[in-house]
Image (tube, rainbow, N blue to C red; front, side, top):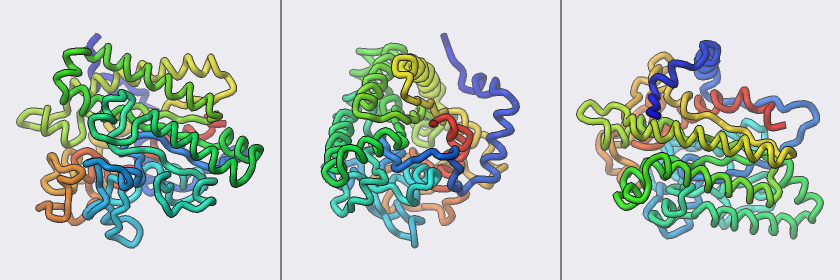
Amino acid sequence: MKFSSQVLFSQLPVVILWYLAIAISSQRYGYAISLPHFENVPAVIVFGDSIVDTGNNNYITTQVKCNFLPYGRDFGGGNQPTGRFSNGLVPSDIIAAKFGIKKLLPPYLDPNLQLQDLLTGVSFASGGAGYDPLTSELTSVISLSDQLDMFREYKQKIKEAVGENRTTAIISQSIYIVCMGSDDIANTYTQSPITRVRFDIPSYTDLMASQASNFLQELYRLGARRIGVFGVPAIGCVPSQRTMHGGIHRTCSDSENQAAILFNTKLKSQMDALQNKFPETTLIYLDIYNPLLYLIQNGAKYGFEVTDKGCCGTGDIEVSKMCNRYSLKTCSDSSSYIFWDSYHPTEEAYHAICSIVLDNKVKDFF
């Protein structure tokens, strides 16, 4: 079956489109959300890729890094490259703030972490990681299984510090966020001839969904009970994919968007099955595909003047080490751009997207 991203989006109920418009226009900078009465969220714990990596790649040997300017240009007081793949904050930070935990979610590998940092949550994410183990292997980053190993180590550390009973409460009551899959489609599948020989899109998205299910089951076994999982965004519409696969007019790559839609359908099906299998666990599918596409298609209404190029350099292809202090033509005002580099949104866009995706989903975690 051939999916059309444009048709799918146009079929969204009018009330949802209305909600998206209100959320973007009124909540671009986010806010701490009100939790249901008597509910406690001790920590936010994140797994995933560059969208939610807050600096873990700084501490490993990989080419996938961004701990240099102009990354972090608008972070804190300015010009603070932290290893976040944006000009400022990323969703890990924004989500932690929304749940009222803390303003910044540190990377687990930061050697300066204090006990309080661990008790209130960290990010295990690694830029370049994916559900497919090959994705992380190709870029020498922290695989999903390695992120789980770090989580096991994390549990042991807090158990030694605060005891088993408090550790059990922290682990079971925390909010878990999982965000990956884009690199599987945009890099491992699209750019690897060997992978395309072994798989077609239906079978490759089957592999991704199966790996996602295995990960979520292991996370459950390790004590997680409140888990939100982002789908894959409209990856074919990010600037780099437009440049490589969108032809002379740099249109969205429909094949990659179709792959994202197909995977998201399978991911949600797997999550529904796991919810039935583990009824004491809350599994929340977080749709990012439609909100990002809506923002791209209607950016001018909400102050985004450039929707198809990144702020860094030409905006067509620069990302990671190609986006550096010597990149010519880097924009002066990133807040008018949806994308910071050719692959990652700006802090401004992340605030808008996180509000759209999360604000009406919070109650579902409890």
